[in-house]
Amino acid sequence: MKSRLLKKFAKSQKYQILSEIKRSQGLSVSELCERINLSYMGVKQHCVSLEKDGYLDTWRRPKGMGRPEKAYRLTNQAQEFFPTEYTNLTLEILESIRQVYGEAAPEKILYQIYQNLIQSVSSRITGVTLEEKARSLAAYRESEGYMSEFYHHPDNGQYYIIEYNSPVLLLADRYKIVPQMEEQLFERALGVKVLRQTERVSGLYKCVFTLQP
Image (cartoon, rainbow, N blue to C red):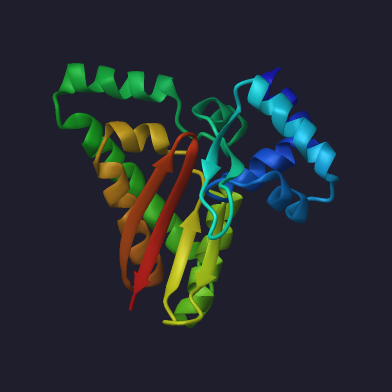
């Protein structure tokens, strides 16, 4: 039932608003109007409704000139609308494995899972240049629910892959090996050194993979 409701909601204007905010560090009503085909009052009404339901909160964002502007960002509750590959049940299973087989057992299992995943992902990456490979990896991760984007900095020529959702966030919070293996996955798939950095504010999540050839 929940999956059907989520699929229906994903086609709505409210989901478009949540999705655009998810791919940012917070947006004002005016900024949302620029990103989706909806009037100022339409966006405002949806934001007020989403805030009332507990999916958005607001803060006053400083501007270069004038008074700070009101911007919306996601709450932790809004995560239920975005893909989560591993659930509390997975954590309970890993905890049971720890109790039966010892402290190191869960991380050993996660290590093997990621070794298999690294081989699978690496075989999917296409392209010859680093940029082509990075775009291919970002596209694959996008299809897996990571809300992934390739970014080329115009000034220093640096390549980044930026992600605004993590289906493995619950695991990453509990087991430190997961962020390490995510970084290793990128390095193996792209053949370069990768630096992984995360930012989390309220319900917003941003993970930046800096490619270091």
